[in-house]
Length: 504
Image (cartoon, rainbow, N blue to C red; front, top):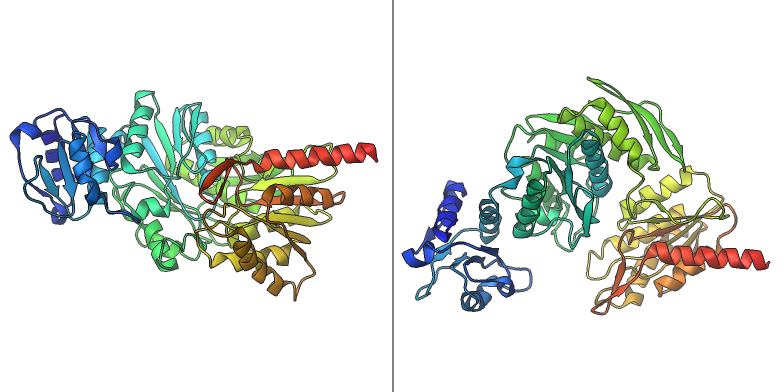
């Protein structure tokens, strides 16, 4: 594909009101196109460079570097004169980046069944469940999300939930090349706002729920929801929408979804569970569908995972996946990294669970799930991320103090903020709640020490919850990223507890 062919195809794909105008240079346009870039440091000769207005810097200022590196054409939202390569002016550089990437990689989403999953909580687990079901149905499945990017059995650690359009399209093209018939991807609100997923043809769109999060990026909850809703407004309109009808925002999504399948526990829904059985061993319940009954036997734990399983079953049903594959896929999934992950074993006298819960609603779900397992006490270790939404910090403190017996507030990823200040903001909420509850609230800045302390003070029959980081294997402090693994530290604390017990 030449640069000219790419630009002409891209122009046809743009909505009429956004059609670009560009200055032609026959010699430059007929060179072979080698890629699409938004980072001038990654430009190589023959690439189209898209100058994207960023949150901290405008890509326009890096155009000279892109041209010096060999860019064959420049795409921006601002016109220019006297430039030695074609300069394409568009109304939205982000939309242009997405559509150019889709064109360059020859629309890989059209060669697979792509499932997009959005919502605040449950995206990752629902993705793992859906992918497991599709694999059980005989479809080689790719996956992109918070934890991993995966093609079949090969995985790489995810850098962000939904990558930028060129990386996203490139990875999907690899999926197609390597024989994937399906792709399950988490679609974040950031990605939808920044149009990274534009140009993807979705076979199904799934909504889990909406609760407070990312208000450091979105101005308010309405803007946050509007970003999520974009997934259901994007073409093709006839792709099924799978919607959690128990969520207060469900109707607003049903209004923009011509073909909808609902799931839920509390309200009448197309997909709903029979009597539920909860234990630390997993979940048992049946789901009736038009094509038969799914006998759910899952190692996942707790009520939130009932919703995740229902979402995956409803999505699979919409894609005409056989009942047998649903049964098998759910049964074979051993768990999801950092999602109610058991760090202890049967020989330990306390149960230690690591979870990614990092919002007040997710923390509430985690604590309520643990409480259903009838522990002697709940000991909760958690923190809040720095340089992120500050409004949730006291709310997380309140939830922890209301539902825990012992609360240890510590550092999460403080990033460039003072860890003690973050802890103080969380503690204000916890202290306000302890006027009504009897929780023992403590603070330990060092996360390693906090986890070890929690396990050491736990008593026989207690559950220790380590929340906030889940699958992450690092901690970000003062501009540095250092190795840190909650599960590994928890197991260190459990081993110290065993040694002390044997010595005793």
